[in-house]
Amino acid sequence: MLTPSAFIEAPGYFGFDLYGQTMGEEPNYLTYAENGTIQLRTRVDGPVIRFNYVPSSRAEFGAEFNIQTYAINDPRYATTISDFGDITLRGKLGLAEGEVSRAPAVALQFEVILPITSFGNGLGPNTVRLESVLLAGYKTEKLTLNGRVGLAIQDEPLRAHEQRDFLVLSGSIAYKVSETFEAFVDGGGFYGDGVPGAHADSEVRAGLKHYRTMFGKNTSFYLAGRRGLVDFTGTWGVVAGFTTAIRTGVTP
Image (cartoon, rainbow, N blue to C red; front, side):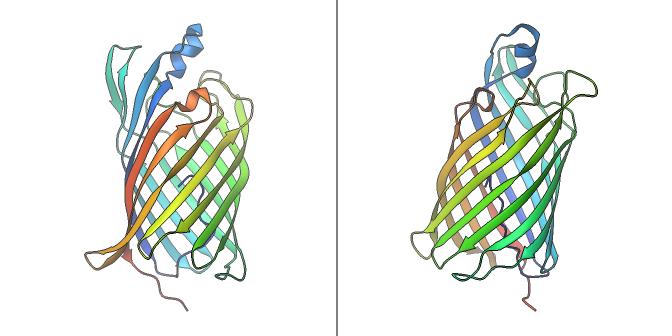
């Protein structure tokens, strides 16, 4: 999901995510920066692995690693190129726990992206990126609403000692259509004055989530279509994966 949940799992929860995603017609920002030419390629990220741990009812920590990122038939190189993806670290502080059908949840989340992907092929900027946001969420028995607003700071990859600041804004709606299926729409991104490699980015996702038990663990599978809303995001893509509870938490 683009929009993180403001709700925090019960203390002791340890979760694992595995997913991959694609996006068609994403421009190579290096080619555009050099001569203003837009060369489009299909981007593939994955497998991406993520771990989440909840030490207390008011805190959650996460670590994510994109094992490999690809540009399929990149016109700049006339071939498919790939590299390791970046590492993302997250910390969430709960301000209000929230109650189903009664009160919203509120949390603060800080995120830092550590650069792993090399700069030279245009797959990544190879810069540190920061994000600090306020999360809010509300649940009923069937409907879940989540919102995110805050600030993102990205170093420019092509100019030393320069950065771009963006408004982070996104929201999601999920509706449980049955005991095991949930439909969702999620949209938003970074808004502001960007440059190649540190650019505004936004998209909309719509899909389904399926809940079931796998190897005795609570698991959800999801599949969604992606639609980029600005040029440097790309046009159409998909995201698919699953989330499972390696260890469930215990409510105090």
